[in-house]
Length: 186
Image (tube, rainbow, N blue to C red; front, side, top):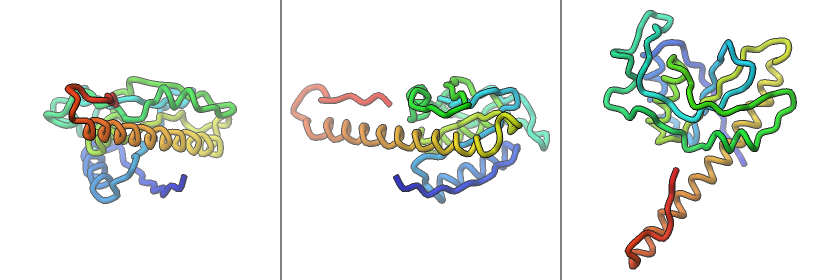
């Protein structure tokens, strides 16, 4: 699979993140936006399944806090990634690295970014929380792990898109039946 990779560093600033994430989806229209955040207390890599819209009470580096702790007023409470993170975890095997599933990314800039990206990308986003670099977890190991994980996410995302398209075509082409031929739950 050929992949064009673009990397951008986002600041720990709610307002700036909101502008940049919107711009990413408008300008680049990625197949999948993968966000990587550092969790200083983590001992493993966590693949986050969903982003949450409410509960942002901590201030960013500029002292700003989203009004009423909400990421996107009027937005859904939770948006789930179209990438099945549990399945990705099951397919990942990286020596000396534990990769695990998470259903709660916390309520700070990482989850805020993730929710916005899931919203703008119609679920085609991912968030990977990584531990800080250390002697036991050097940049070379992190780079290798991210490459393997993102490749698996892209494959999973591609399979989900193909399955969704197949289901839409099945539902559209057999309109003589009272119920759809196939169902898609993504």
